[in-house]
Length: 253
Image 1 (cartoon, rainbow, N blue to C red):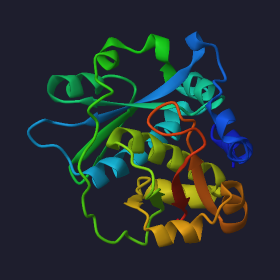
Image 2 (cartoon, one colour):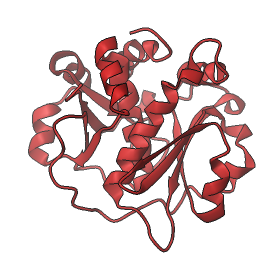
Image 3 (tube, helix red, strand yellow):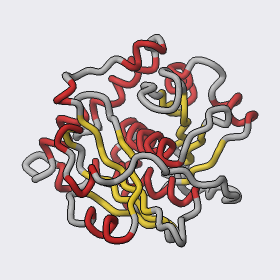
Image 4 (spheres, rainbow, N blue to C red):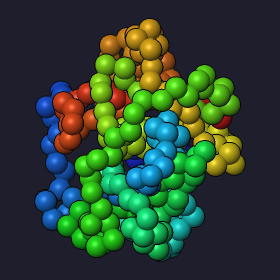
């Protein structure tokens, strides 16, 4: 493919083959580490269901990357390009009430899935996070498991690792990685069809049998030979470095 996501496919093919400990190596000086803030709307009185929130996060992360403002000459091009040059790190935070309203003024894309809302913001240096974001808590982003039913066949399927417990905030970042990597390896026509459907996707927790079938062992081989994208975490929060957290199937595009 062409465009900002083009380098991801080749770079993450190598990433999947790294020893687990090496996945946690930071590629930049601390002052230059960049991340995409992913803001989860978690109203105290009426929190969303977990699955639609994760689906909104997965869509929002990709929608920011492929927004027309990120194209060369656009106002978002340089920040997005610089972020994609290193780890595609994301930091999930929770917001409610006036704090949720405040982040709507920051550069980004808000997605609503069945009443669950997420705003993915333009990435930047973690040392320069706007005050509207820095005051939002990273902790407290979990939600109880829900029962979403069968996944629609007409959209990509993102399967969470059944053996790796994650908070909703952590899972939101992981599924955002998954949509980006999937878009990076799709053909132009497939990606544009997906864009026409609003980059919608389905998120489910894999059954042990599904996971064993799609990820038989080597995540790099799974990508190369089976056409399934594996997300492998750097291990900065919650889980061990090198853990495969999500498998993405390019269905319905």
